[in-house]
Length: 217
Image (cartoon, rainbow, N blue to C red; front, side, top):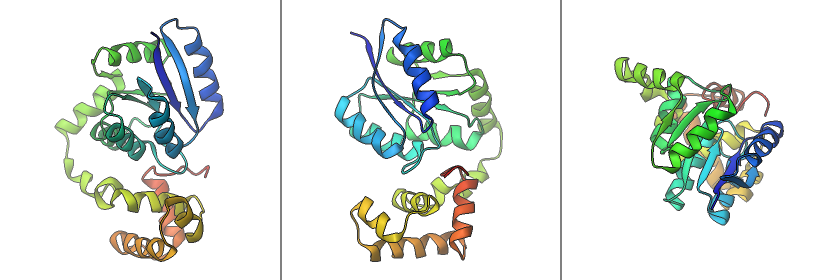
């Protein structure tokens, strides 16, 4: 049986390229590809892939929180992060979320294929650049962890912060998350208080600086 793979990346060109390359591997098959974290969660549940190749910066729900949900709902699934980010805070948060592998996007496809096969054998896979970041964390100062958005905000608050930063209104957020507009407004006030921010513009800048959204959104 081929390895069933779900691709989650907000760039169609990357998804199409990976689909084409994976099609050339006899032991691999792409069962679905998605452009946002929320659909990644839904399709992981629907298709039951062996491997999810997950980007970090994605609309609607970031790859870190999407990974946490996927692994909670599908304990047998394994996630490999494939991201432009190689800084220690992103590596740390993805590892804490439970990924089995982490590669940077400038890697060769052969390395990704190697990582997929290794992870399927229950062997973690980190590219050499990522191993260096992990070692930096062990030898460096961990105090910066306390200021991360993943330490300061709850998962629901991060979800709402991302949607606010992507330009959704309170009504649209309420509809998407199946909560009331009043609850959205309450969360937004708590977020601004926690972060000591006073405007939506400051919220957006903060979300971009923490990698919840990119400047493209």
